[in-house]
Length: 376
Ligand SMILES: Cc1c2[nH]c(c1CCC(=O)O)Cc1[nH]c(c(CCC(=O)O)c1C)Cc1[nH]c(c(CCC(=O)O)c1C)Cc1[nH]c(c(C)c1CCC(=O)O)C2
Figure 1 (spheres, protein in one colour):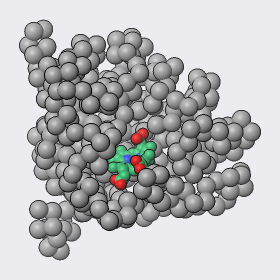
Figure 2 (cartoon, rainbow, N blue to C red; figure 1 turned 60 degrees about the vertical axis):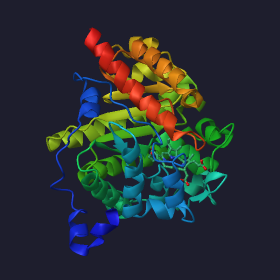
Figure 3 (cartoon, helix red, strand yellow; figure 1 turned 90 degrees about the horizontal axis):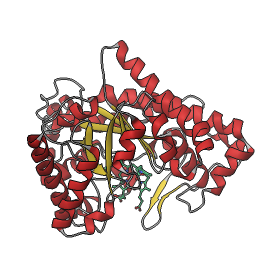
């Protein structure tokens, strides 16, 4: 249906971040802000992905980052899971690696291998290869257009989440050049060149702040910061190289938004950073998102009611039969409670998962949380 409006004037209108349709389901935003909800809102990280046959069909034969650069394609891929499932939020289809691209690095998505930098940063001198001044508005304009178009086309069904990779996670890709088992290349920078590492993290932070503010201006109604590689650091390095930048991002984005009277909930997902939960709950974020290795009750204790929590079902629980998924969800809800809570997986979906299981997960969250709220 999206191609109906490729009628030029209508299309131009939908690229303007104003006159957005009225939001009909604010459950996700309410839970993020710590307000009462009738049911627990739910969405899935990587809800737009290869586990959906319509996603595979749409993506077939197209380059991944070409897809990311097409606002129409991003819009379509963001909407696909909403047509199937009763999710309470959507997340814009894009990738965290568009930020290193905007800073001047080349990134390819190699099928079967994942993201690959042909020319990663090897020595401190390589920082000179990065643009000194990044015009985020220009370089990432295609993401902003995708957000605006999608916000119109969601028709207020659910809120639209924008996102970014966090500085440490992006730095690790820029130096490793791809995923890694040991992350020894990027970790060696922290121990050999701590000052240069901080310079790079600071430059990434500056770009990320502009990027997130641009996403809000374009129509994003919440923001998630993915620190997917937090867990490869120990607590000391986490406190030195992750936490200050995560805090700086939230504080600067929130301060800027406040000046124009806006308040957009911010979520931080620092995967496997157990030791960081208490600090993260005092870092200007509204929501701390958890991976599946953390006990819900322990997470509540460590974050002490200062934030809402999001997560954290083991994605592999989606391989269980439906009845079992329902039980696992019930136990998870009992652990977190039904307020100040957004149900999600502890990380993204995998391509071989069954869409029916996602439907069972979403239904179970809604059903059990409504029942539990009635009993209270
Ligand atoms: C580390 C990371 C990346 N990208 C992202 C992260 C942080 C989240 C996490 O920890 O998983 C973030 C991301 N990437 C994608 C989204 C879209 C929104 C959503 O969650 O639905 C989001 C939020 C689309 C995507 N990004 C990617 C896909 C799959 C590839 C495809 O569609 O062809 C999707 C749907 C590719 C990608 N991009 C990246 C990886 C590791 C991969 C997988 C490569 C592979 O499996 O071959 C980098």
